[in-house]
Image 1 (cartoon, one colour):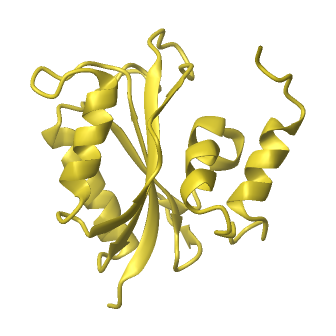
Image 2 (image 1 turned 120 degrees about the horizontal axis):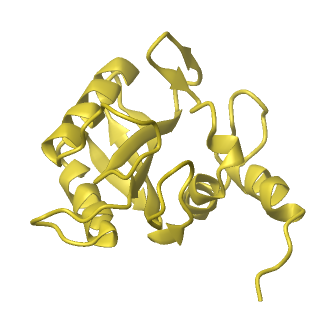
Amino acid sequence: MNASVYLIALGSNQRHPQLGSPREVVSATMDFLDGTLGEVVARSPIIDSAPVGPSLRLYANAVLAMESRLSPDEMLYSLQHAEAQLGRERRGARWRARVIDLDIVLWSGGVVAQTDLAIPHPLFRERDFVLGPAAAIAPDWRDPVTGLTLRQLYARLTHHRPVPR
């Protein structure tokens, strides 16, 4: 298989005993993925965002672009394995505090619609903490469903919000 490019979203809102704060966890995870699952070709800045769901802790979020020879299924499995290695437990309430969350947002191969894997990520168009960092590193990448670029999707999402003061 030729190399594909993946946009991977990273999020953390829980300290890791060795890696440290959520920002340090996200940064270390980006370093870990580079050369392990493929080659990281772009990294967004790490941003802070409000939690989604019942968690009360702020999240550290980022997006990376990675070239990889892994298929989407292999990438999903590898990301879940990396999450487990870093202490993520996949039981309990959805959207609870977690050491690391890794999601495939987009894939250069287009759309995947399977029971356990959907690319594009079904909620990415609604999440400024994904779209902002994604647009920062891949502004012209087109969503295969809407045909809009990440820059356009981010502008649409944030257009009607008041400007923070």
